[in-house]
View 1 (cartoon, helix red, strand yellow):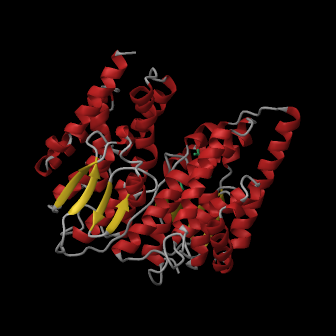
View 2: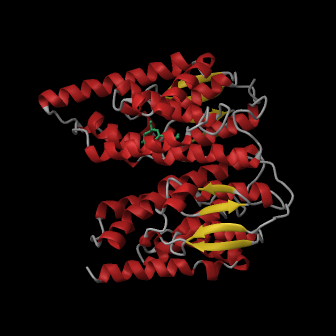
View 3: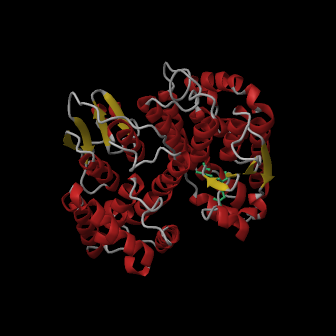
Length: 479
Ligand SMILES: N[C@@H](CCC(=O)N[C@@H](CS)C(=O)NCC(=O)O)C(=O)O
């Protein structure tokens, strides 16, 4: 069934939820494939040949006749685009798709990291389970339970790739006995329903077996800690504790449609993701209202705001009653609905996948590292942390490598991924956290991108970066 001559290679390890999600999807699409077992416990993912395919050293990775791709969410989107008989698993309708993207984003940047943060220190460092990590895991499970209120599947009435992604994690939590899932009645019902829906796609062989294997390892480790308090260092942990992921997109461009009402954008100038969306709104020349929402004053935690976005992040948009959060999901949605052409988000599945990869990188690597370094100082007055700086520099190094021989972050053309990344980089520059000139590809790209965005009000919108920079520097000098 696959487009090229060769079966698709998937680099897979049974205990890994994202690899199981991608493999189940390959089976659901009936694609010929080779499973290349990649034992991350034995360091297979750090070998040079693997790093050439995925510098971020995560599994799954696929190789579809020479086209390699990583991140399970990006992979799933690409596979449905290219090989799906219909769009049921990843709807093309921009609003329906935006909800799938949002749930994938939730899985990648909330549920999976919280799952990792709870289990991995025990599994690989022999640390006793952390109550704080449990509280955070339970908080995201509460959000998931909320999404499933009066809804059959995580993104609406039908099964989508978001269910593949989320069930791979939920079944692992279940197998590890970490949380009694029955205390989340909506999750529990959905879990039974989705297992049944995925039965024909290798749920038992691919997913249950891997989840059970993980659960067994975890339980064994837990009982050995309880008895011997042994500590086992493991080098996977360093990478995995970093964790993270993301979500997606799709082609199909709609003519500039007529807006009845301006788009509301809940925005705060110092917030890089807010600025990315506002820049795109300006680039697409959309009528809009800015609703300033200051998280430092708790304006993102009012009951009114939480109704719009239970995850209490900004930006949020309200497009004539269609409410959407997560900047990356919003960027994709706006280009789909209002882009005059597909230049900022290419329709071609391979080019689209490249943009997705970089949005994923921005959402789940660059932005978290940016926050981890700056927010303890800004909000808690803590001195900067060397480890957080090392991690920030590490992702900047990746970005610098991505930009080798490339004009923009997702290829030779400007895309929404540049909007997302530039708002973070400019904030790092304003805070004078890192000398960006030490990353020559980033530096050259930064100048090029600022110029490309000049006509969309970059200078004015990006003043928020200066506001953040000043705040950070003041806090630092007050220490
Ligand atoms: N966002 C990625 C996350 C993948 C991921 O973190 N996989 C883990 C295994 S569950 C991994 O490869 N860890 C090794 C590492 O990060 O070095 C995806 O969805 O593919």
